[in-house]
Image 1 (cartoon, rainbow, N blue to C red):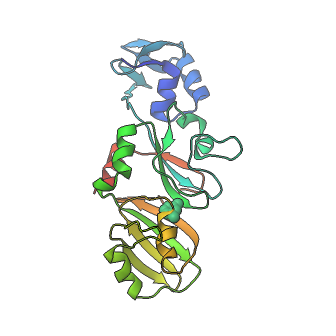
Image 2: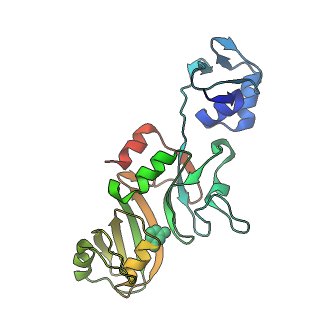
Length: 235
Ligand code: URA
């Protein structure tokens, strides 16, 4: 049983602004179990109710998966007294209770961040045992050397003695690297390059598994992921 207001359901499932969802319900565009319902505050069971919008069935997704192109300067947290968080950037029509970022990107890191209300999914996505790849583009303050590829491939030992899983380094330019890791330790990429005497000036996450940051998604913008998009994560 998943009790919900009809306007919230329409807004969440179709990505419509809440006010637009209300207006459309008033206009008789929404049916529930075969009857037109004009009351946006109507409470029903979202799991079993048969809803249509403009004659088309609206299927129910229990959880929401949002892909954000995280900009610099905001925190991967659910709330903060002073600083803007990634949740503050979510558009009204995608807002739901219980949303949180899957793993953390540093304040100055940009790129692909998933925000969801599905705890099991988040756990799978960040658990090192699942071996899900995360690929970053790093701009460094010094020159990359071919022999570093081997160092990453063997598994870097961080300054505090922590051993990282093997990672794949591709040198794109003299100070620009693509690095794929299979875990998510605190400040991992900065600490990995740190062991080689390199500082990270810019860091951008471009993919998780085969799910890529869409090229046309501007920093700070969000899009809702489909089941097909999610499946790419495990490829
Ligand atoms: N590694 C880092 O050092 N920072 C991030 O934000 C992500 C990975």
